[in-house]
Length: 217
Image 1 (cartoon, rainbow, N blue to C red):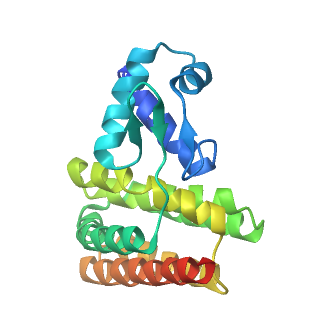
Image 2 (image 1 turned 180 degrees about the vertical axis):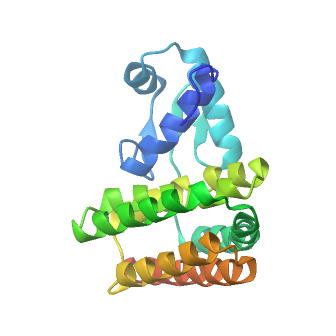
């Protein structure tokens, strides 16, 4: 969550990302400047600044005087993004385990339980949101802001796609088991184990999403 004194365009960037994930601005959809300024209650200038940043991240494609298009997600995009995420997650999970403090462990378990509650309620939007919250917290423990920002900027479209299609058979049970292993490894400071589980978790997510893309062709 951006701080109160964060510049308006940065707060907008985060809100637009969140709205893409939640489906307010759907994948493949065209969004006009009027729609954006009306929704966020601001002038066009901070919206443009936010969109320029999001375009640099690959989250939107700007159109001259015509707003933006939210890209569609395909197999190549998923494959590339998850390979990038896998490399970063291995590094961040290892560092998180090495830096974890006693007070962090309770938060880790609470976030894990929040995701499991969302799964139990079959709330796909909440599953995506709580999954991202757990991973983001683990990533911030690594104390590597540039890597965390790359992760945040490259999560948006994949999370939106996941929310729209759901999960493959048995995937959520596997996610819960993998989360528990990851949280245990980080909580006990086992960097090597945390890195291994982070890689396995990311790789299985990549394969599950690729299978979903192929089924929808």
